[in-house]
Each structure stands twice: as C-alpha cells, then as structure tokens.
Amino acid sequence: MYSSTSLFSQQRCATTYISPNNYKQDYKSAAVTNPILIPVAVHVVWHAPEEQISQEQVASQIEVLNEDYRRDNIEIPDIHPLFDDLAADVELEFCLYTITYTETSYEGIYNQLSGGKRRVCFTDLGGHDAIAPDQYLNIWVSGRSDNALGSATAPGQASTGEDGVFIAPEYFGTTGSVSTPYHLGRTCTHEIGHYFGLQHLWGPGLENDAICSGDDGITDTPKQYSSYRNTCPSQPGNSCGTPDMFMNFMNYTDDACMALFTPGQKDFIHHILMTERPGLLDSDCTSTHTYNNLINNDIHIAPNPTDGVFSIQLPSNDIYDIAIFDSTGRLVKQMQKVSGPYDQMKLVHLTNGIYFLKIGNGQKIYIKKLIIAR
Ligand code: ARG
Ligand code: ZN
Ligand code: CA
Image (cartoon, rainbow, N blue to C red):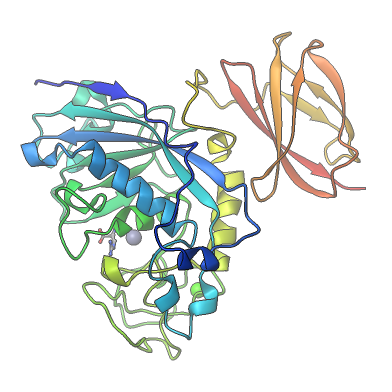
C-alpha cells in the first residue's frame, strides 16, 4: 500500500468571521464575546483521486460550522415563525489545527475493519491516526460503502483511537466535489451534534417509524417521527400531533432547509462538553499540544464540595498551569502553581456552582470537577 501524508497547520483561529451581510449581525447574540473554541484535525484519506479534496473545501466546512454553531447562518431570518425564537447561538467556534492527506489502497475505507479496528483511524491499517482525540475533534473524510453521508461516535462510545466524526468527501464543505442536496456542509454540522451527544428529533429509534414514543431527551424540540429525509418543506408536517421542527440540524432535511439548534440542544452540548469532553476546552489551534493523556486519579482535591478554600495535591513538583471553567465552559480564572505537590488554593470570589479545573504540566492534562457551596 502506498501512503503519503502531508501535515500543515493553518491559523484560522485568531481570525474573526466577518459576515458579508450586515443584517446577519443583528441575529447574533451581542452578549457573547467568548465562544468556546474547538480545535479540529481533518484527515483526508483518499482512494479515488476525486476523494483527495482541496484545502479550500476543508476550509469551507469550517466556515459552515462557525455559522451554524454561532446562529450566523443565512437561513436565520427565514425560519418558520413557529420556531424562529428557538434558534440558539450555541457559542462554539471551530478552528482548523491541521489537515492530513493519506492515499489508501482501500476503497470505501470507512467501512473496512481489520481485527475489529476501523482502518481509516489507523496509519498502519491504511488510514490516519487520530490526533489526541481527548483534545481535538478529529474528522475523517473518506469514502464509505454504506451509503450514509456521515457518522460520528457519541461521547464514551468510541473504541480507542476511533473517536470523532466521519464524512464522505462529496458531503464535506461547500465547494469542490460537493454533491447536492447535501452540498452546504450540514452533514458535518449534524454529525458534530451526535459527537456532543445529541440525538435525532425522533429519538434513538428508526426514522419514520410512525410511533411517537421515541424522544431525544430535549424539551424544546417537539416530538416527531418524520425524518424529513430528502425533503425541503415550506410548512411543517404534524407527525406527532404538533408541528414538526423540520429545520432542526438533527433531522435529515436537505442541507438548504436546515437552520437551527434549540436552546435546549445548546445546553445539552455544553453539559456534554464539560462532563464528557472537557479535554477540548482551553485549546487553540496555534500551539502544539504535547499532552497525550487524560488521567484524573493522580490529583486530589479536598474538601470537595468546598467553600472556596481547599487543598490540591499534584503528582510532582513540576510547574502546573491551572485553568478554571464554569459549568458553561467559560474560563473564569487561570494561574500557575509552582510550589510543590501540595498547595492551598483560595477561590473566594467565585459564586456557588460546578467548576472544572484543567491542570497541565506540558505532558499531561488532568480535569477535576470542583463544587463550590457555601
Ligand atoms: N447520518 C445521516 C445520514 O448519513 C446524516 C444526515 C445529514 N443530513 C443532511 N441534510 N446533511 O443519513
Ligand atoms: Zn444523524
Ligand atoms: Ca424533544
């Protein structure tokens, strides 16, 4: 097998997305100045030459994510009036850490397994290794033989090294080889929803099953069983007795007719980010992360819950950077700890609530949950 890999970084993170249409700004939440930045590694694993998508096509997908997860997509003003106040700014932004290119001898490699391992996720099996999946959202763009547009691993679901999002090249981005009606990058928007634990609006069962017992666990998405696959309705159907939110990103509606995540879905994504995928926090796309593990047993915090004064025990005398996030993923405090393995910490200015401490020494990161209750 022949495999070639080129690696480069693009520093898209620092650039603010400037909307070409000024009216769009009005729909964006003015209060949010510090979205959570998610660093992305894209692995293009190609067999047929047309699967070797361009860097521009990759960049076009990142742009779509930064519209859809910031309520900055062009569909916002046209959302059906029944649902137009339910479009949330999810407050996530995505930056491209790196793109890798790998030629593979395996056709439809996404669906090819070797000893139970998914080939596309491993360099020595004809694909490309994940980059620190605890800290980067890995997206593999490759051929598939299952007719799906894309797929994703839910939190806690993936086998080692196989965590992330998988999209067929013709449904990735908005330019180059994309194919209508899935040519606007919404497959990736949808699959990242799954990566953060969201379900389809009809719940975990099959689409179009004509029963209304399935549920996505989100209260502000109405019950529905219709999946809206291959459709672009102008009026909602009523598949479970109330109007269907067909334009939700977690349906199967055509790309051009998807428009929103709800506030309930946003809260769910943030909760999953804090509890199941905290290694993604406090990252950017410029620094090279040398961390390779997320181990929490080596750090002890007591008492916890705390009134704000507590002791922290670290595994060594290294210098540790400590970043503290609130329950919505916002950085609230940063410090450096240099004074040996035991230390007293005082967080008397923080209000009661759940916080996450991300503690790193350049080799490892640790995430600890801290509850402040007075
Ligand atoms: N997992 C779904 C599928 O492959 C993705 C649907 C995405 N829908 C879309 N309009 N892009 O069927
Ligand atoms: Zn899906
Ligand atoms: Ca619901």
